[in-house]
Image 1: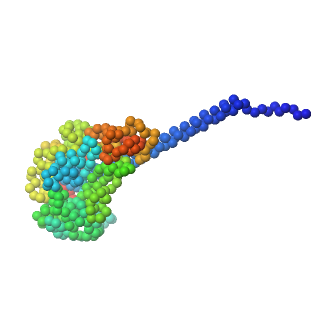
Image 2: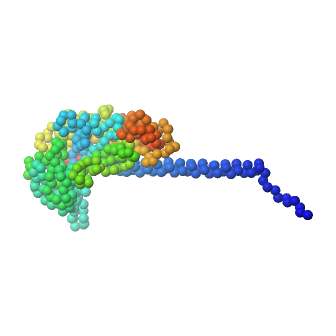
Image 3: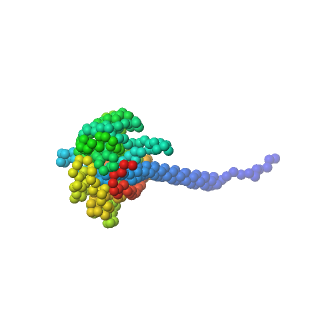
Amino acid sequence: MMRPSSARGFTLIEVMMSVALVSVVILAAILVLLDQERLFRVNADQRDIDESARAATDALNFAIGNAGYGMDPNLAFDFQYYKCQDNADGTGKIKTAACVAGTRESTTKPDELVVYSRDPSYRVWLDSSGAYTGHVWRTAGATASTLTLANNTVNYAFAQGQILLVSCPGGQTYTYVTVGTSVAAGTTTLTLETTPSDPFHQQSALPTNGCFGSGAYVFLINRQRFFIAAYPDHPYLMMDPGIDLNGDGTIDAKDVVPVAPNVEDIQFGYQMNTTVEPQDGVLFDGSAESVTTPPADGNQATPCADITVPYYAARCFFERPSNDPARLTNNPANITNVRIAMSIRSDRADPNLRNSQKNKTIPALFDRAQVDITTTAFNGEYSSVSRWNAGYRRSIVRLAVGTPNLASRGLFLW
């Protein structure tokens, strides 16, 4: 006779309690995984923002830190000429205020920055014997439309739009010209642009002084125009060198260089040579954040009344100390510090941020007020609900860069 087994199963209540307990554990694990995924996305987005910020700040630090290197301080920052959007007087020579209002400074869209400096690689040492090469040449001939080099042994290919500083030995007499046609590497005869009329198109000076055509030094002047370009998927901080970079015979949008992705706004403020403490985004005198009015003794093209020749001979900004009245005006030569603020967004949209109020605004920067992108298509971006409500993270990056070269007391050759 079989005896009843003492083993027994689980009751329904026990099974339900076990399932509930396991469900709680699984749910907790899922929540932890979701939180980890969210943190991973946040960190990845922040890394993207940091990388863009690093690329942008590196480029701006280098360009602004070198502004005015080896050239006239009043020409280091351009508020008047290159890529200005106004020609109200019909002369092709843009007035400062018109350029500022049209391009360089805005309270409703990104600012622009145009800086110039001498190419620093003009003298590169090869060995201990003293031999060197680099981006410097000597002249063998000059007319009002051409410049002939004694040699081009470094096989440099001059591009259309390249600015050149042509200086007589000693650096007391010099002028600026612009290459009009791109040439192959090694070419020694350069055709020059004859328009527009601005400080970098002073080719008419070449035949007025014999030194320009025989043994003068020729240096490269680099131009860098920083601006924000809005593309369908990403805004970009771009750099326009103002030359025919791709060699297609035209200086256009194909020649610009991407600097950093996802920079949706950039604003510049200028600290001048004054004892008055400036505010973010404004000049020392409390006016708009960009240079607006040239000083009484001239503008960027003719900064001093004592210039009576088409080339640069007497330099008032070179000759005057930092406490001279001419050095206390709002002429671009007197910029001592450039303050920068950028709004940089994440590369990817985060659905978790959709419909949040923070996601619907671009924070205020300097004198550009906060932008409600649900009603304003900022700089061509966020023109539809699907764009502004995508869920981008944003960070504000601020920095200040000094301009030590603008304090130079004279043009140097080496």
